[in-house]
Length: 118
Image (tube, rainbow, N blue to C red):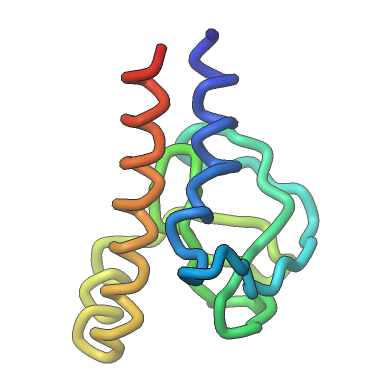
């Protein structure tokens, strides 16, 4: 399996880690203008949230392909979060920052599991 396909599969399955015990997946999935991830160039056009939030300028998100933390720009395209922005997130919103790290770990775990299966 090619690297790009492996990463796409990992991204598609990462959300399964955050399902309810009964298998439900009550996240809100919102389309946004297609924007390449500034780190891995994955074509991103959806945002998912367990709290029902919709993407807005300045919101944080995680690329489920490369697991980098991104920020929505005014036109809802994506840019990488700066070190200063990540520090500020940790200081001002520690619970949310922890959720972002959990999503990163989940995406990495799914990617490793798929790689191990071949």
